[in-house]
Amino acid sequence: MEWKLHRSGWIEERNFDIEFAEIPEGFRTRVRVFGFPVLEDTKHVFPNEALAEKGALTLLKSQFTGTPDLEEQ
Image 1: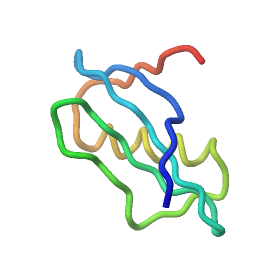
Image 2: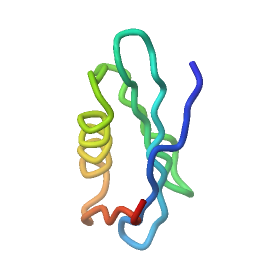
Image 3: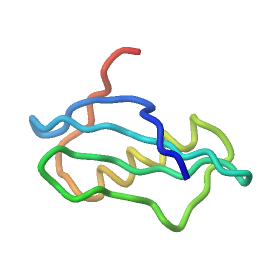
Image 4: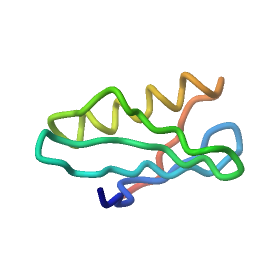
């Protein structure tokens, strides 16, 4: 499975990257918050990039109290 950078942003003064891996069923997601272990959603496969991004942000918010701020594309 090849992971590709989708978007970057900030949460609680920490930089993060959202990465997707495209598989035949859809998209898998993971979030890299620098200085922390990788947060990977191993349960869900999302049918499109928009839902995968939303799932990654939900995963991020479940681990940090701040609000994610995505950088402009």
